[in-house]
Amino acid sequence: MNKEEELQRYASLIEYYKNQLQSLETQFSYLQATILDYSQAKITIEKLTEVKKAKEILVPLGGGTFTYATAKNTSYILTEVGAGVVIEKTPKDAIAIIQKRIDVLEQSQKNISNMSQQIQQQIDEISIKAEQMLSEQATR
Image 1 (cartoon, rainbow, N blue to C red):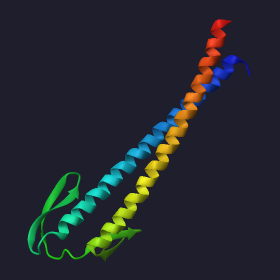
Image 2 (image 1 turned 90 degrees about the vertical axis):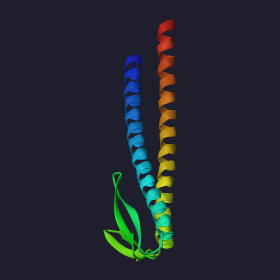
Image 3 (image 1 turned 180 degrees about the vertical axis):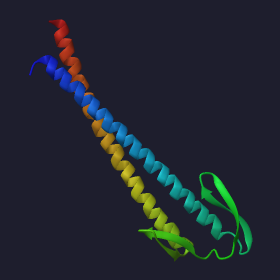
Image 4 (image 1 turned 120 degrees about the vertical axis):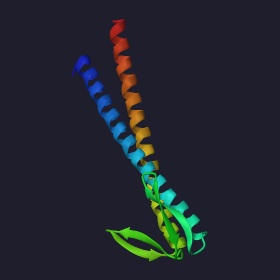
């Protein structure tokens, strides 16, 4: 393989790695939004347990919208446990489930961050090799 083909190969690899980085950034952002959603649910449950029965409350519907409701029974929370199945849990148990989900998502974020760093290192190494080849050509 001649120098020009090798430089072209390096350029293709860098482009490939940049696309991977962009994909990982998208995944990271999605995870961050999901963590935020779960964190807001945790806060809502915590605040709901402080409310006295028959008290009017604002319930978040999502998308920055709310509705008025009356707190009749705050000792149980309906929680999805998978496959669309919803069961009653105590607020403490519901918060524990949400926290486990947050922990898994945060670990996924760490994994994505580590992968991004590795890919960035590969991009840097390839860039250095390409720059060395170009400087060698320029000195000849």
